[in-house]
Image (cartoon, rainbow, N blue to C red; front, side):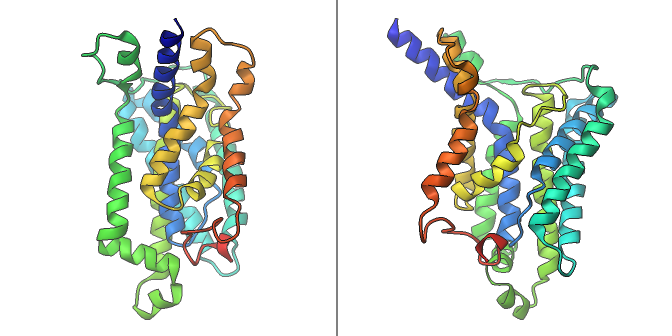
Length: 306
């Protein structure tokens, strides 16, 4: 009986890591690209919420979930582009403007999204990868949404791109040594603006996942601070795309801890376990706050290092 409960708990955590961790994966990959160029975007929470609302609205109006994903990516791209362009102006602080962008994105989403709280938009269908298994619990856990393998592919692609392509070299050089990049005639401002825009598009897709997959509806409390937590996640991953993947799955498993325990009949402190991702964020930041290690691997031009 105890073994069956442990198996159920493990299945719940694996399924939850994939289901809950997917938006973390997209947002953290986007922020990793942005920060590799030497810029911080604290407006990810606003982009995530705006992507969730616009993706849900587009899916409802077109009756196509993939059209919703595309619209969310476009909205994220535009908000990221706004952040990149404004922060390129003289004496504009990227952290301060990021907070403003967070408020702008969430405010617009709440205002424009009120008509879409009740209507039901089409959802992205899962891929039944576990259909061949005899255990229905594993079959359910492995019913993976197509955005998760897309996120896996993007993590590998970004990892490869950073180390093996000219674009990745230019991005890392701009983020590490702006003076050297300028001496080699790299367009520093353009690289940073484009990196921030691409990062915003990734965050927008993460928002579409929230409204079109899990939990699969639009409401004003949808995000629960995942955009802000993704910034801490990138620091924990040491600005490595594959590290972002591992960290996203870890945070996803932490977020699924409460429901997994409830599935085996342990419901005491359920709401406390729901706070596990936030407690994990604090624990990671405290554990990594050591001299010479806190910002190990950080791009040299990042405002966090100055």
